[in-house]
Length: 391
Image (cartoon, rainbow, N blue to C red; front, side, top):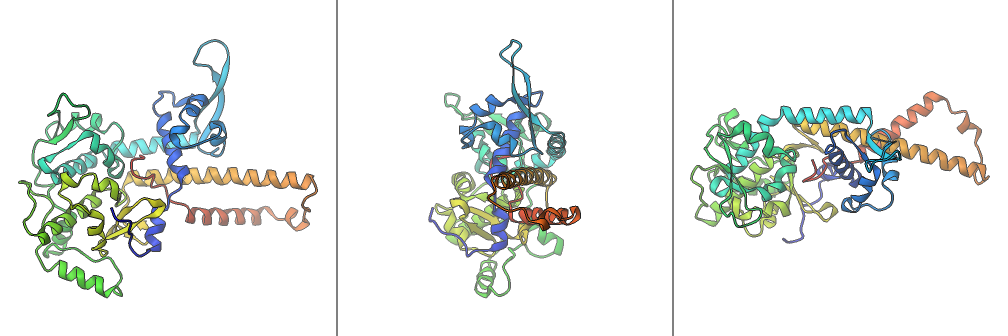
């Protein structure tokens, strides 16, 4: 893939901004949820630290987020009367985790629809389960989505293994076509206005050349990405028209209206995408924004955002946003405590003078300053999109 990106869009770059801490804490949350008691020895987390790309002591990391995790002593799992440090969720964190789990459970019908649509986009209406793992995060599917969805929708999905002698060859297959789901986001929008389906340019009117190219692209009929008889159109123009429709629809199905281009290209054969998908995306800036933030090429569906905010937030996204707010609050609290402790040490050593106006700062003024600082930090930090593949 060529190393190119779209001209910088500050609002969408802000939407893509993420902090490694939130990704790590989400992984720690998932580790804890594997234990029925939602508690685990700190040494267990320490043993997983390298897989989280972290160094140092796990206990120090947990102390940075006092609003999320608590460390306490409990009986050693190895037996005996010895105690060792354990960690678990705080009450506030546990409540938000429960809220997220409730949002995921309530979203299972919508998950089944999204998964069915993805299979309807694919060649043969099937995808390898090992490959579907790459789409689990963008589609908002939990780790155990197969156990959740297959028993309740055995008339729609089926697990098969066409190559029993191969490892990881299991496939998820759509066993019946669902006409009610075979309506793309473009077609649904056209139905509302009773007009012919066509793509919409989400760039400002000042981008005259891009608008003109979009009008030219729309001059030929829209090709639905859903087809009961899967086939790739004949001419190069038709091939690109369908490929653009497929990517547009796939991004519309994701919770955050974005996806890693590397993951997207992983499904070239299954979705009938061109060899250089990234170059195709850059040819359609009205629809797609391509960013190389953190050296990870990501494509964003422009029409899914209003500035840096999603136009429509899924309940699961809102639950994750609340978790991110708590994580940020915990880090802010920790930093404030460290800052206060360091200032006190310097004052004791006589390195800085104690200013009377600082000491006499009223509690109301102090609270106002802390609140302003907190809002500014939250504005700058990424609002917990957790990244692809990190639920």
